[in-house]
Length: 104
Image (cartoon, rainbow, N blue to C red; front, side, top):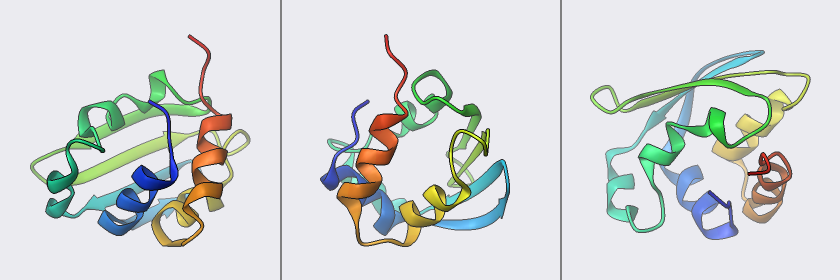
Protein backbone atom coordinates (compact mmCIF):
# COMPACT_ATOMS: atom_id res chain seq x y z
CA UNK A 1 0.00 0.00 0.00
CA UNK A 2 1.42 3.35 -1.06
CA UNK A 3 -0.07 6.46 0.44
CA UNK A 4 -0.76 9.45 -1.74
CA UNK A 5 -2.43 12.82 -1.38
CA UNK A 6 -5.72 11.52 -2.73
CA UNK A 7 -6.18 8.50 -0.48
CA UNK A 8 -5.03 10.45 2.61
CA UNK A 9 -7.59 13.15 1.79
CA UNK A 10 -10.33 10.52 1.57
CA UNK A 11 -9.21 8.95 4.84
CA UNK A 12 -9.05 12.27 6.66
CA UNK A 13 -12.59 13.13 5.57
CA UNK A 14 -13.99 9.77 6.66
CA UNK A 15 -12.21 8.96 9.92
CA UNK A 16 -12.29 10.65 13.28
CA UNK A 17 -10.38 9.87 16.43
CA UNK A 18 -12.57 8.42 19.15
CA UNK A 19 -9.82 7.66 21.65
CA UNK A 20 -6.08 8.25 21.67
CA UNK A 21 -3.48 7.32 24.23
CA UNK A 22 0.23 7.31 23.48
CA UNK A 23 0.71 3.99 21.66
CA UNK A 24 -2.95 3.33 20.85
CA UNK A 25 -5.48 5.16 18.70
CA UNK A 26 -9.04 4.24 17.77
CA UNK A 27 -10.72 5.75 14.73
CA UNK A 28 -14.39 5.82 13.90
CA UNK A 29 -14.91 5.19 10.18
CA UNK A 30 -17.72 6.96 8.32
CA UNK A 31 -19.75 4.46 6.29
CA UNK A 32 -19.47 6.75 3.26
CA UNK A 33 -15.85 5.61 2.87
CA UNK A 34 -17.32 2.60 1.07
CA UNK A 35 -18.03 4.93 -1.86
CA UNK A 36 -14.25 5.08 -2.36
CA UNK A 37 -13.51 1.35 -2.38
CA UNK A 38 -11.53 1.83 -5.60
CA UNK A 39 -9.11 4.11 -3.70
CA UNK A 40 -9.33 2.90 -0.08
CA UNK A 41 -8.99 -0.78 0.72
CA UNK A 42 -10.29 -1.34 4.25
CA UNK A 43 -8.86 -4.86 4.27
CA UNK A 44 -5.40 -3.41 3.58
CA UNK A 45 -5.87 -0.91 6.43
CA UNK A 46 -6.58 -3.85 8.69
CA UNK A 47 -3.12 -5.22 7.86
CA UNK A 48 -1.04 -2.10 8.48
CA UNK A 49 1.18 -3.89 10.99
CA UNK A 50 2.57 -5.86 8.07
CA UNK A 51 3.28 -2.71 6.06
CA UNK A 52 4.27 0.14 8.40
CA UNK A 53 7.23 0.23 10.78
CA UNK A 54 6.11 0.90 14.32
CA UNK A 55 2.57 -0.46 13.97
CA UNK A 56 2.26 -3.34 16.42
CA UNK A 57 -1.31 -4.43 15.76
CA UNK A 58 -4.45 -3.35 13.96
CA UNK A 59 -8.02 -4.26 14.69
CA UNK A 60 -10.64 -3.46 12.06
CA UNK A 61 -14.21 -3.86 13.25
CA UNK A 62 -16.45 -3.45 10.23
CA UNK A 63 -19.64 -3.85 12.26
CA UNK A 64 -18.70 -1.09 14.70
CA UNK A 65 -17.02 0.89 11.91
CA UNK A 66 -13.84 1.31 13.93
CA UNK A 67 -10.12 0.87 13.40
CA UNK A 68 -7.80 0.48 16.38
CA UNK A 69 -4.06 0.79 15.92
CA UNK A 70 -1.46 -0.05 18.55
CA UNK A 71 1.87 1.53 17.68
CA UNK A 72 5.34 2.23 18.99
CA UNK A 73 5.28 5.94 19.87
CA UNK A 74 9.07 6.08 19.57
CA UNK A 75 8.78 5.20 15.87
CA UNK A 76 5.52 6.96 14.96
CA UNK A 77 4.80 10.31 16.60
CA UNK A 78 1.41 10.52 18.28
CA UNK A 79 0.74 13.68 16.29
CA UNK A 80 0.84 11.70 13.02
CA UNK A 81 -2.56 10.16 13.80
CA UNK A 82 -4.02 13.53 14.81
CA UNK A 83 -2.73 15.01 11.55
CA UNK A 84 -4.23 12.14 9.56
CA UNK A 85 -7.67 12.81 11.00
CA UNK A 86 -7.55 16.61 11.16
CA UNK A 87 -4.98 18.14 8.83
CA UNK A 88 -5.42 19.55 5.37
CA UNK A 89 -1.80 18.86 4.46
CA UNK A 90 -2.51 15.46 2.93
CA UNK A 91 0.68 15.25 0.91
CA UNK A 92 2.88 15.74 4.00
CA UNK A 93 1.01 13.01 5.89
CA UNK A 94 1.29 10.67 2.91
CA UNK A 95 5.04 11.28 2.86
CA UNK A 96 5.36 10.60 6.60
CA UNK A 97 3.51 7.30 6.25
CA UNK A 98 5.40 6.28 3.09
CA UNK A 99 8.70 6.89 4.94
CA UNK A 100 7.54 4.28 7.47
CA UNK A 101 6.73 1.58 4.92
CA UNK A 102 8.56 -1.68 5.45
CA UNK A 103 10.67 -2.98 2.63
CA UNK A 104 9.35 -6.14 1.02
